[in-house]
Image 1: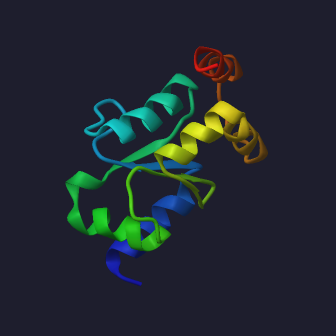
Image 2: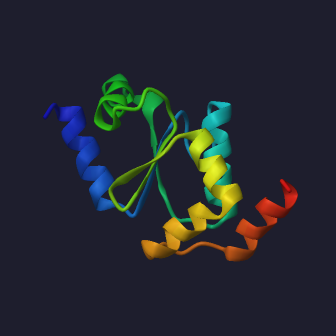
Length: 120
Protein backbone atom coordinates (compact mmCIF):
# COMPACT_ATOMS: atom_id res chain seq x y z
CA UNK A 1 0.00 0.00 0.00
CA UNK A 2 1.35 3.46 -0.88
CA UNK A 3 2.16 5.97 1.85
CA UNK A 4 -0.97 7.99 1.06
CA UNK A 5 -3.20 4.91 1.11
CA UNK A 6 -1.64 3.73 4.37
CA UNK A 7 -2.19 7.16 5.93
CA UNK A 8 -5.80 7.25 4.66
CA UNK A 9 -6.47 3.73 5.93
CA UNK A 10 -5.14 4.62 9.39
CA UNK A 11 -7.20 7.85 9.58
CA UNK A 12 -10.41 6.19 8.37
CA UNK A 13 -10.07 3.34 10.87
CA UNK A 14 -8.99 5.51 13.82
CA UNK A 15 -11.93 7.96 13.66
CA UNK A 16 -15.67 7.30 13.89
CA UNK A 17 -16.59 9.81 11.17
CA UNK A 18 -14.20 11.23 8.57
CA UNK A 19 -14.97 13.60 5.70
CA UNK A 20 -12.38 13.91 2.95
CA UNK A 21 -13.25 17.27 1.45
CA UNK A 22 -11.99 20.32 -0.38
CA UNK A 23 -11.27 22.82 2.38
CA UNK A 24 -12.18 22.37 6.02
CA UNK A 25 -15.44 21.98 7.93
CA UNK A 26 -15.21 25.63 8.98
CA UNK A 27 -14.13 26.83 5.53
CA UNK A 28 -15.21 24.48 2.71
CA UNK A 29 -13.74 25.32 -0.68
CA UNK A 30 -16.29 23.71 -2.96
CA UNK A 31 -20.07 23.55 -2.99
CA UNK A 32 -20.31 19.78 -2.66
CA UNK A 33 -17.92 19.70 0.29
CA UNK A 34 -19.81 22.62 1.82
CA UNK A 35 -23.11 20.78 1.55
CA UNK A 36 -21.90 17.60 3.27
CA UNK A 37 -19.92 19.45 5.95
CA UNK A 38 -22.94 21.71 6.49
CA UNK A 39 -25.25 18.73 7.06
CA UNK A 40 -22.83 17.10 9.49
CA UNK A 41 -22.17 20.37 11.33
CA UNK A 42 -25.89 21.20 11.56
CA UNK A 43 -26.65 17.72 12.86
CA UNK A 44 -23.91 18.09 15.47
CA UNK A 45 -21.88 15.13 14.22
CA UNK A 46 -18.34 15.11 15.58
CA UNK A 47 -16.19 14.41 12.53
CA UNK A 48 -12.63 14.72 11.35
CA UNK A 49 -12.21 16.81 8.23
CA UNK A 50 -9.30 16.10 5.89
CA UNK A 51 -8.52 18.84 3.37
CA UNK A 52 -7.49 17.09 0.15
CA UNK A 53 -6.32 20.41 -1.32
CA UNK A 54 -3.45 20.45 1.18
CA UNK A 55 -1.80 17.31 -0.27
CA UNK A 56 -2.03 16.09 -3.85
CA UNK A 57 -1.09 12.53 -2.85
CA UNK A 58 -4.07 12.42 -0.45
CA UNK A 59 -6.34 14.03 -3.06
CA UNK A 60 -5.58 11.23 -5.52
CA UNK A 61 -5.05 8.62 -2.83
CA UNK A 62 -8.57 8.91 -1.44
CA UNK A 63 -10.02 8.32 -4.91
CA UNK A 64 -7.89 5.20 -5.29
CA UNK A 65 -8.64 4.05 -1.73
CA UNK A 66 -12.42 4.12 -2.22
CA UNK A 67 -12.47 3.52 -5.96
CA UNK A 68 -14.76 6.61 -6.05
CA UNK A 69 -13.86 9.41 -8.46
CA UNK A 70 -15.18 12.46 -6.61
CA UNK A 71 -14.70 14.43 -3.42
CA UNK A 72 -16.15 14.82 -0.80
CA UNK A 73 -16.13 11.30 0.61
CA UNK A 74 -17.72 10.35 3.93
CA UNK A 75 -16.55 7.42 6.06
CA UNK A 76 -18.36 6.10 9.14
CA UNK A 77 -16.59 3.55 11.35
CA UNK A 78 -14.08 2.75 8.63
CA UNK A 79 -16.66 2.22 5.89
CA UNK A 80 -17.09 4.41 2.82
CA UNK A 81 -20.62 5.85 2.78
CA UNK A 82 -20.62 8.06 -0.29
CA UNK A 83 -20.26 11.49 -1.80
CA UNK A 84 -22.45 14.56 -1.83
CA UNK A 85 -25.45 13.17 -3.74
CA UNK A 86 -25.58 9.98 -1.68
CA UNK A 87 -25.24 11.84 1.64
CA UNK A 88 -27.95 14.31 0.58
CA UNK A 89 -30.32 11.46 -0.33
CA UNK A 90 -29.52 9.57 2.87
CA UNK A 91 -30.13 12.69 4.97
CA UNK A 92 -33.51 13.35 3.36
CA UNK A 93 -34.63 9.71 3.60
CA UNK A 94 -33.48 9.26 7.21
CA UNK A 95 -30.94 6.59 6.21
CA UNK A 96 -28.07 8.72 7.50
CA UNK A 97 -29.75 8.86 10.92
CA UNK A 98 -30.04 5.07 10.93
CA UNK A 99 -26.41 4.62 9.88
CA UNK A 100 -25.19 6.97 12.61
CA UNK A 101 -27.37 5.27 15.24
CA UNK A 102 -26.28 1.76 14.20
CA UNK A 103 -22.66 2.85 14.58
CA UNK A 104 -23.10 4.63 17.91
CA UNK A 105 -22.39 8.08 16.48
CA UNK A 106 -24.06 10.92 18.39
CA UNK A 107 -26.07 13.47 16.40
CA UNK A 108 -28.96 15.90 16.92
CA UNK A 109 -32.17 14.11 15.86
CA UNK A 110 -34.17 17.38 15.92
CA UNK A 111 -31.69 19.00 13.54
CA UNK A 112 -31.96 16.02 11.18
CA UNK A 113 -35.77 16.40 11.22
CA UNK A 114 -35.48 20.14 10.52
CA UNK A 115 -33.39 19.40 7.43
CA UNK A 116 -36.06 17.01 6.16
CA UNK A 117 -38.88 19.46 6.95
CA UNK A 118 -37.09 22.27 5.13
CA UNK A 119 -36.66 20.06 2.06
CA UNK A 120 -40.14 18.48 2.04
